[in-house]
Amino acid sequence: MSTAEEVPTSAPAGVRRGRDRTASMADVARLAGVSSQTVSRVSNGYAGVTEETRRQVLAAMKELGYRPNSAARALKRGEFRTIGVITFSLATTGNVRTLEAIATSAASEGYAVTLLPVAVPTQDEVRGAFSRLEELAVDAVIVIMEVHLLDAASLTLPPHVQVVVVDSDAGDTYTVVDTDQAGGSRAAVRHLLDLGHETVWHLAGPEGSFAAQRRTDAWRHTLTEAGRTPPPLVRGDWSAESGYRAGLELAAREECTAVFAANDQMALGLLRALHERGRGVPEDVSVIGFDDIAEAGSFLPPLTTVHQDFAEVGRQCVRAVLRKMRAAGPERGTTLVPTRLVTRASTAPPPSAQRAGAEAAAADGRLDRGASGDGTAV
Image (cartoon, rainbow, N blue to C red; front, side, top):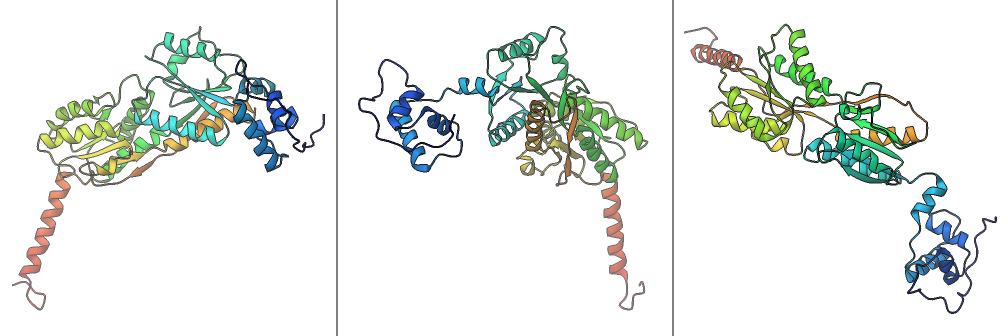
């Protein structure tokens, strides 16, 4: 079959948009005065077509209302160039920002994204989402949910569909992309200990969350490693309201001088509770969060927090799933995206250290005022 481009000729008379049928590639070819092969090359964006011919073919497509059959092209290529994303929550900052990054990265690679929301996090709902994949034209799936929901023996994947899991504890069962939860938590706790706090309280995320569990484990391990006894755990559900309720409990504990909150929303509620109970931040209690949401710098005071690179998580997910589709990478394993500590005004030395510093400064001031002009005390 020749691949040479055809020079447009005069369109045959009588070719008009049909009222009773869908326009075909042959109709476009006749109206544009080229072969169907040339129409196909224009539809698929291939090179080797002059700009003049391309404009004439596109004009014919528009006049006839022709739309390329993407399903037929996909069957011919053996791929649909679409990635499915399964998630059961769009209420959390992390999921929304990760999904946005996945869609952007997929588009840059020439892939579309199909979202398959799961109403509630149950095995039946997850099974139903995977079953729907058989009805949809997707080449791969990125799953943003707790991995234990993927462990049902009756859960089967459509043939040849590659899977990447985000933010999970899947180990070597799946290909996983995750934030370095433990590393970020260690940095948060060490920051507070280095400021001089005797220990660090923890406002944890919900019990069923792997991310919350890894942050809690790292908090506990870092304190134990430093020879400190971890105080009782206080738990929330990621929301600012749960942070406020937990904050009322923590504000009543005079011995609490530093809190590591498992996300920024709970830290926001905690700040409100401490303010209402008359405990200053960071004068009385230092607060540190996790996520570094866009508003974190506008909290009062601006929040010290652990920055998660959600955009990089999304990019790594798309890269991993494309590598699997192209058999160019490992089938299993975990990729960790680094975190970094962002220090703002919500953390400071504990009150005892602040008082000691103030007393030392006052003493220095008295000495200076009491000194004679030649440097001797009066």
